[in-house]
Image (cartoon, rainbow, N blue to C red):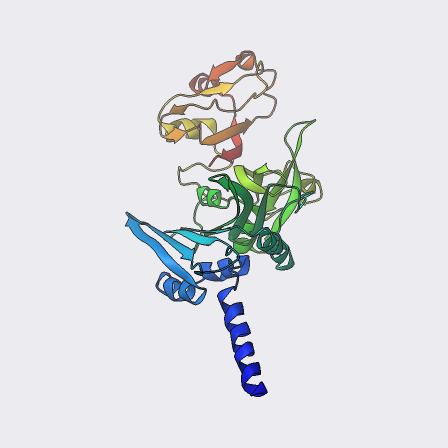
Length: 342
């Protein structure tokens, strides 16, 4: 009789634990690796039921809600998982009413090797970004109907199969994503000399080679949110001082037909229209003004010229000068830096 009672209590304990199992941030990561066809089976095993499944164009929207237990003295933890899926980008959002699950989840991400920025406080910061390879997870709190929810939002970007043009680099919107494709040996964290007084944290790809590129981040704490990519022959970075100078033009190809070292005359032919360059009366001297003229959109592609002994040339003694006028004056301008904006 005692044996039967023991087995009965043990069975109830096991069932209780299964029923009360949490859906953790690790489960969210595991879910992101499952094919679309296997999602439903995975969520059912985790005690979730389908809320909706809706396809609109190339995006599949799915929601699962945690099954609640009837006739319980204590209110169950409320959980839901939302998904937005397409071929190149996937979002998985876990919402829970449990603070302990939220805090444990953040600790688990750090233990699993996720980068979460410099000088961040896990307990005080209301929003944290965790990154690892092509996955980023945003942890934050929200108020819904005056009730606090704890949220983990996972974004998974598709790792590209290959790269052809410099413009393809714009899809790498974080240092971690950059490392996931090129490897840690080819990506260096560095300090970019934006001006004499302003320094910015950056990432340098293939430093000291003819394929070097500098990634400037909007968020220097998490090395995330790409501001622009600089294609240059000489690195304006702290680490660039230590690299051997490459006495050749950068070899990245551009979809627009641009190339490092291109002459002003060649650029005029490529653009098929005149454009303007900042003169010496501007802080941006020798840079193309950001206009959308001709074949090249200079709002999305910044160009800086170099020229030997041109700074005293009278044609530059103004705020802006026509590229066609400079070419007619036979001033030997060549492309020195190319800046790509997302």
